[in-house]
Image (cartoon, rainbow, N blue to C red):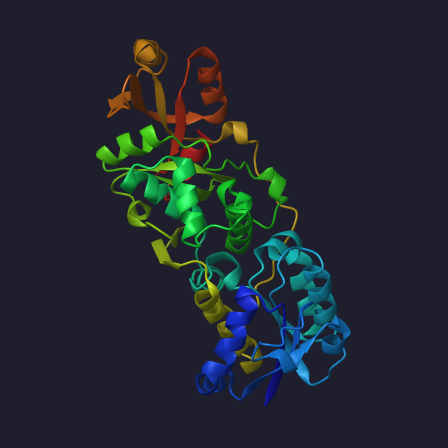
Amino acid sequence: MKYVAILGLGTVGGGVARMLCDNRERIAAAAGEEVVLRRILDLRDMPDSPFSALVTHRFEDILSDPSISLVVEAIGGVRPAGDFSLALLRAGKHVVTSNKAVVSAMGAVLTEAAEAAGACYLFEASCGGGIPLITPLSRDLAPNRITGLCGILNGTTNYILTSMRDSGADYADALAEARRLGYAEADPTDDVEGYDTRRKLNILSAVAGEGLTDERLIPCTGIGGVRRADVSALAREGCAVKLVGVMRGGYLLVAPHLIPRDHPLRSVDGVYNAALIHGDKVGDVMLMGRGAGADPTASAVVADVCEALSGRAAPCRLRAGYVPPDFDGYGCPRYFCVPEAAADALTARVPRAVRVTSPEGEAAFLAPPMTEAACRALAEELPLTSHLRVLSDLCDDSEART
């Protein structure tokens, strides 16, 4: 029999606690022996919870309990979650988390501490919720050089942009609907500004081989500036607009992208998430599913619990200190929109630009790969009303270094 504890009985922690009870026999078979929930750390008393008898307000009750061999960290944020995790690992206890903030900020320190103590620090649920992403990257695709990775890694923003396309709603109305349906938090800043996607991209790129970087070094643009007019016009071309995290040619980027009609991510709609990974030998691999929610996330967390307790886990060691190249040199195809009166000026400046379905009174173009520096110069010369990067082929990372 193995005893485990949970830090935080919120959405994820509650889902894990229920799953440990509901699927007790299947979990015992996967872990090699019965897994019993012994303690839950939470600030609240929760007298009406079925787990109220397990609740403690003292972290030391879990840290000092020699019978507890694994702890699920479901607090969220970097502090005190990171400090608690470090103390647990140094005490020789396995730690499993879905907390992308702490993995992005402290993953190198925590995986090093786990290795030194002979413990596991596992974080499968931190990037894709119920979608397995960490294990495929770190184990199944390990023989490959990962030349590129792109993903729709946030269900809230994907729902909002899908709603703008399908219903014709503007951004504010689509966000209000997402809140009403429970797909957006009361304060959706982390989601709509791209910060949540940025943390996940940082982790995935580190697992893929780049190493963790300071999140502030990853250019990040949210979806607040996406225009309904562009979304609608591009839909008539069979294209979509999605918030995408991209790793190509050493560059890291989070921004709304135009997704061409034949791209695999084009059909990933609503609250679904997906990641497209390109390995130099395996080619493209795409993983898709529900990226958030109590049950999908609990599924990934408990899978890590079973791996750690069974002794089968192959922990992923994260490195720190990666510095991406100067973003001015990043290149990719572009979508530009200008007032109709400026159409000739744009084609004169970008001769290979091709006109596409345009918002009323404007002229929209698809342009060949251009660097960030070249786009900034263009914006200084012409009255751009819209600019989107176009998601292109991951197998050729040389385009990113145009």
